[in-house]
Picture 1 (cartoon, rainbow over the protein chains, first blue to last red):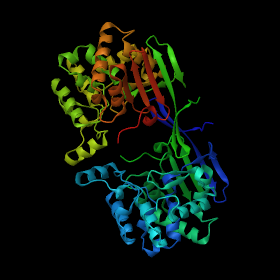
Picture 2: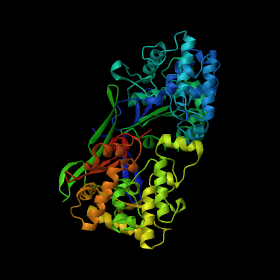
Picture 3: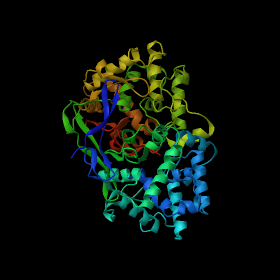
Picture 4: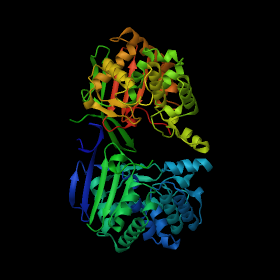
Length: 291
Length: 291
């Protein structure tokens, strides 16, 4: 089956390129409010669910035990641009857990921000701290420390941290996340494919707390507050996620994921949104990437 | 209508993203040998036709008058990576025409090659010479000098250079290229949308010389020889176009264009190929972009 064209890219008088995809909007009870395309198909949410991957960090008490600030909680939910204050924040998170950058298993890439990358090139080299996922990984490491388990294998599917993450995702989305839908994300942690409509449902629960235990609802509220109060730490300069949360404040939580995934929670409306562009194009799922 | 899926992107056990598109393979008489999808739809060929945009440079005698080497002719057909030897070559082309980088109207961007960009950032700044189209623009400027016309407006559709380019494209593709299918390319010159099957036909003529005047066929042969003998100058280190021509030598001419266009000429088989991915994805139209 063929999903409809969601976005047309024009050049002069003609359409030059087209992006197909699916959109699901759900309330916190899982009722579909709006749907386009095949919303029952499973998609890898990739980085769009970093806030859900950070729930256990807060709910377990680990974030409080190590004294994480709101900026640092936002970094745990971030695909940050690798700008200097992002890097410094992740270093602080690791130091609070008694660790340093050598504990990160996210891999190395140059900053997403081109200007940050060129500035870095003038004076140094990229490290794991510049990886857009380094804050999420620092959160996983902090959780492992608080749980008293080993920190070397925190990224593996069978590690207690990732088992906890998976249980939280199943609770939010209501989808069974077995091995047959598990793959490895770009930063080496597991990613589970979820039906798009379940992803939207999960974000409606994240935005409202409805359908969650009280401790889990409190963790969701705290992460939303941390992110929407510190949107620069969730993405970075001129990034779409940052700009949307700067505009709407506590009214909208948004998060991009790789391969054309985009998710949002609208607490006041009680809705969650999940978008997947078939072709994986970020420019169609959200505003354009920063240059 | 919906073009078929040409490429699937997998992650673990599942297909994560999909790219639709059309493919046309034509002989030099314009007979379709293979077709997938809507090959009658017009597409902007973008940079895929730089070799056709350079025909007038050679056919007019301008390239000989200014003593362009084969490497420099390859640069006139290139989307180069902005590596040091590309930049030096374009500077030489301009100097041979009595000009310098200030004459370029292609705009400035950082080298396509990430390693070249970071190396440049350590010591300097990007200039118009680093623009992947700078060799094509140097060719346009040289042609304007040889024609004895002004060089300031060489990029405008009404300038004699672009009128000549348009006439050559109509001759190769057999498609009428009126204002209603004209737009502006990323580097500021006009681009005309051509039915995909006509683009394939044009590349079959480029590869064989059949259906062209003898002077035009000679210019096509010289540009093919220059590119397939100097494939690094057509793209750069680890680039797909370069690697293909290194592998096949004179047997295959290939050229990428923006927004998922890819073209090839197979002289020995007498065939031309044109590919357009609906969503504009380079990763589906060719191998992946260099990092």
